Image (cartoon, rainbow over all chains, first blue to last red; front, side, top):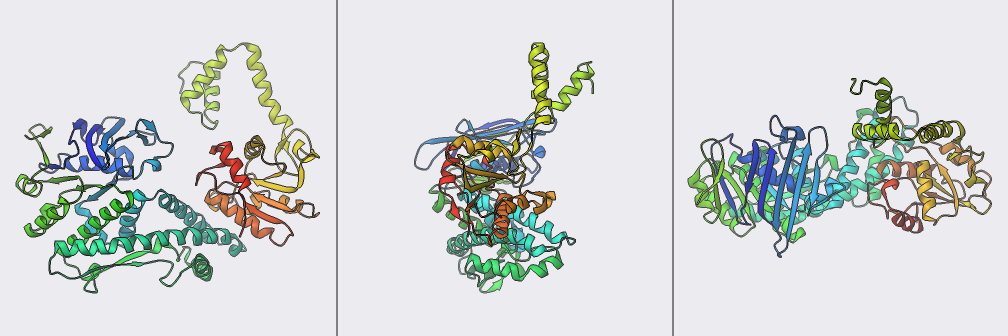
Amino acid sequence: MRLESLRLNDFRNYAELSIEPGGESVAIWGPNGRGKTNLLEAVFLLGTTRSHRTRKDPELVRFGERVFNVNATYVRDGGGKTSLSLGYQTGGRKKGIVDGKEVARLSEMVGRCGVVLVSPEDVEITSGEPERRRHFLDLTLCSVDAVYLRRLQELARILKQRGQILRDSWESNRARLLEPWDRQLAATGFEITMARRRAIEELAPHVAAAYAGLVPGGEALTVRYRPGIGQEVETEEAVFEKIVARREDDMRLKRTTVGPHRDDIAMTLDERSIRSYGSRGQHRSAVLGLKIGASRLMRDRLREEPILLLDDVFTELDAGRSDRLAGMLGEAGQVFATGTERAGLGRYFPGAIRFSFREGGALLREE
Amino acid sequence: MTVFQAPSLESLVSELTKLPGVGKKSAMRIAFHLLRSPREEVDALAAYLVDVKEKIDLCTVCGNYTETEPCELCKDPRRDGRIICVVEQPSDVFLIESTGEFRGRYHVLHGALSPIEGIRPESLKIGELVARLQDGEVQEVILATNPTVEGDATAFYIGETIKERNVNVSRIARGIPMGGELEFSDQLTLARALKGRRGLE
């Protein structure tokens, strides 16, 4: 999928912006605080219906305004055009429009245009809490699998309902009340676990190859799934039995201790945990490996190259890794890259359409 | 907040806003429409509003809204008393009836299990359902609660509660958009879902 044109109205710092990359890669440079990330955020928003920076939609509206709109037209890899539009009015809910038709549920819009974003905060994926790694995986899978997104929503609801019973210690016969929720936790939890296991099996070789490409002669990167239902649990029934066995503990702790909400992804370099021992540079390369892996998985599943959004990635990489990354991306789809230095971006993306910020803040295309 | 300089109009608008799916704008449109309407029409509407509250009660057998006791559906001898279709809301009965696929009887729970909203088994008409299974006439129970996690939990719970009784229990098939509610699925999918019901494992 390639973006042909993008229009923003009262989105973040943009009163009105219209750019027409025509499917070509885009390089944007300029000082910090001008709105480079906001532009990538808009493309990300159209792909996922969410911002990568905030859950609060009012923050996306330009200061002093009440409504924002983001529109884009795309051309599919196999030819054929499509358009996506997302609007929001303060106090309301976001509305999605696909090819001129409003979708009944915003989730119907997710994954119409696959996007993979890399931003400086992503170093948390390999260095932070397991929640960061689950979020990375969920973001990738939600774009390629609408059922997965529904299952995640169901899981959240089941955990909330089950948690209430765990906290209602005055209830007598809580086991009987937990039963229907435990059945569903087992069913939904098992499905999510299977989907994640399969995704990690697909991801792992891509991630390892990308890391090896970025760090030639470096350590071997391994990605392994650590399911919260336990490694040895093979059937839905076995998950249910495990949940039942933990009921007493759960009631005492007032939280659910078995399920995909406890999953982690273990990443090692030559069998040493990156999270515990990785250097800053190793974390950065591992994150890039994960993101490139995610874009390969999306391409395989959607049969459509996702759009890559690289937010200030090159400033943090040394010249060698930058060169190798750019080389790797050359074979992929459309890239939107931002940076503070003109020289770097120009070198890594010689064919890209270049934009920069002029005096007064306007984003202009360079000839 | 006095926008209209007419307290009665203010009150009407604020009451209308409490109705499901009616926002401030629609409420004002309805209120102004009523003001323009002939007196007789408004009188009739007002009378019906009071009427439904006075005449309609819950059927003591199935829990559906009714003006007679028991309700017409429970009394109708042409309906198959061996099958009971269990639904969350009276509006679900109306929807399933409009498919014309079902000739058995109904049982309305008036909600679904939801601990976070304080809806417990005792809050629903589950005891009444169990009572209907006492005399052995009922041979099949179809659980047509909504395909939400709450609807599924309710179906599981009822399934467990009545599994010792000598009845077949089935769960309505998911021909319905997932995470959806019966109200939002069209009649065709609902009819298909009813036909394709499966035994509750």
